[in-house]
Length: 170
Image 1 (cartoon, one colour):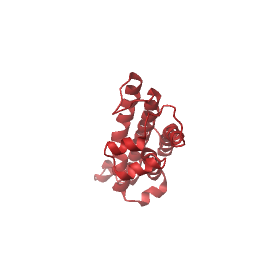
Image 2 (image 1 turned 60 degrees about the vertical axis):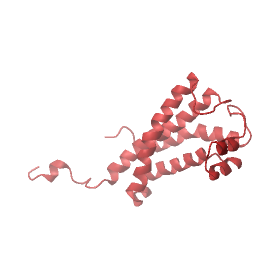
Image 3 (image 1 turned 135 degrees about the vertical axis):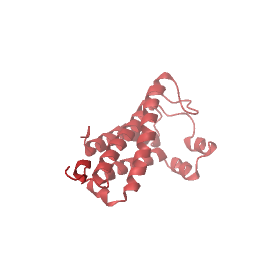
Image 4 (image 1 turned 180 degrees about the horizontal axis):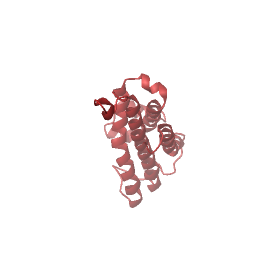
């Protein structure tokens, strides 16, 4: 028995992303609260980011928001019936990778940010940005884990055959 329905987990994971998307959208429209100083696109370029990410940032579209929206689509595919029409691996591989990577990263970020620990050059970042980001990553990761497990159980090979039914007389 699962702890949570996959549709509930998908909604919870999406809701965890909402403050992050709002914050990034606010920054895209010129807001400065919590935003690091300087040109983020230029910082991406200096740090060797692919040009497509730099161009997205130059046009006010943070690549992590695009990734968050892809994560919501993945949650929907794992939780809703139409997802069963897709190849299992195309949902389970990114789902489990996201769960195993994002959950601990998000949790660690929520602990580290208020203590003053940051990743890279974070001059100008406010501690609450780490909480917002950590909540988004951990929430999405945990939801991917719940939805991935439910999807795997729903679509697994041999789900109609239990070990006791497989044995003669069982």
